[in-house]
Length: 326
Image (cartoon, rainbow, N blue to C red; front, side, top):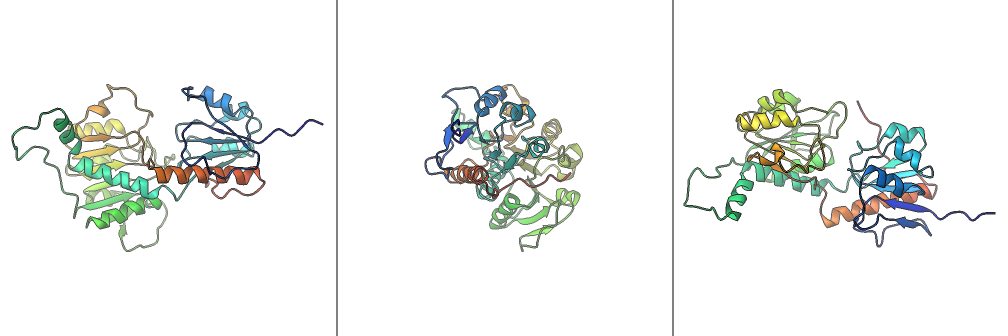
């Protein structure tokens, strides 16, 4: 009889923090990409080919073609809370469990959302660029004249773990907090639940914290930006595609909103240095780093590997992705 092959778990990227003491099935072999190896779809398929488990991140596409290339695959564990990069229907058809990492990145992402609010509303990026360029001139009472955050009204679209964490930070700044969610949320004494249009009309700052689904694609376009108005600031740590980027650029250029900050984009990574998104002075652009703290990424890695270990040990995974709502 031939020996049973060892359990193999592929990781799409090198450098996940927390691997040294992460929970693994006994005798499991970790399969890592070579240093400097490509991170494209073909490379991921080759990496996963003889593996039982696969650990991926948001940029990694997990679809039928990958499943065809990896017939041993039993579980895909996302080091992310969002899962729109995975073909869930195809995974379920093949009996492959898909997991994610909810509940551990809310504070890090909310910190980043609030950083975007401050950077955008107070025009901190143009001020920083001017200082670094050695162009700090004589005092000008109109230079970098932003808008106040403390005491403003904060509207949160998507009041789950991340959205409510943003709301707590807003309350700490003395902001009036409004929220709009697809599902009813319990009263928390911080946010008033309102409709989306009312939220946009009443808010000075809007923070987007929703997944990308058919329902939320293009959620914020020209009409919604006009409701926000010329003193409004829009920030998104949600998913690319929730905001119509062309409409956002037009609204900024025409002064129909004050400022914006994006950590997510319709096309990622955003590598075109000529992209107009990167040259709009009132738009702050960050490279999808909402969860990028040592503590959070370590917790996410360990959670992902706990999910893999559970499935490969014959147990239920603690963090299976929920069914998508339309």
